[in-house]
Image (cartoon, rainbow, N blue to C red):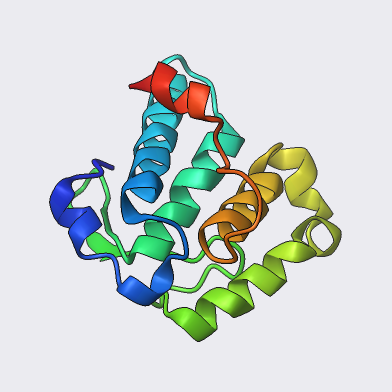
Length: 141
């Protein structure tokens, strides 16, 4: 997904607790890393988890290869409801124990649980560093 200025401008104000530009930089880097790995035939579950979480927080509309458009799904509860403050908090709390409730994800999607937890902790709770290191963000750009 392309992280355009238009998409970033439409992010609901209450959905982020970090600067919008910083969020956009991390989101774009996650999308880029995920796409680049996919082009190499690899799945980067960590980058993918960051990208999916950012899409949902941003209220992004995702388009399939067949052209179908739908709201981004929440990364933990897999809801097709746009993110809003109370729902983001619930998703954050669910992410805290995701690896315990879904140990299958730890094995089948290595890095996913950590990515979702880190992204929500950073963007929503403003707790901890960005889920992708600044050096990774600059290297991807």
